[in-house]
Image 1 (cartoon, rainbow, N blue to C red):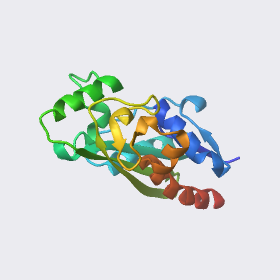
Image 2: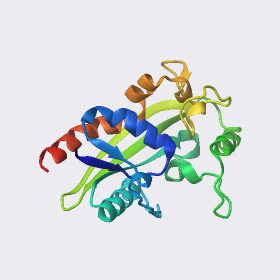
Image 3: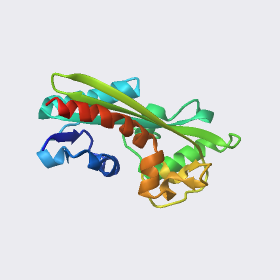
Length: 202
């Protein structure tokens, strides 16, 4: 069976990508499963640059087709922040905050801004195949930030990201709903046809 390397060590992302890609009929593997320890510095100026760095590094180190994503939360009242720095938002001297601390920090930054605090999740996926170049897909999910946390699912900013048309936060969605509506789901759906063609040619 063909193998696809999920180029991340983030357990939340791994879980979501497994759910989204399980029906492709390929074996999904993580870096830890193949004994690969790789820490890629995400110092690009765009999501595409960061995802490309990760996908290329993991593909070259493993010899496997590798899928990496870079995603972020863009809040309009903060001029698109935290954006690229969503995972490191509020960090001091390189010390990363926990997910809960980052959510609290974001709400504090928005306190003097009028609501609704409109925002979107943005995901970029890059697929790197050794000797076959790169493929890029993107997905977006529009919503707003709310001041109180709701729901126990998801990770990151999910408990404070409301989808107004459903009246639910991302953390209140079932996995089935999230796999239909999330930014990462939309990017992965586009990536599936790319992966099918790549593996067909191998």
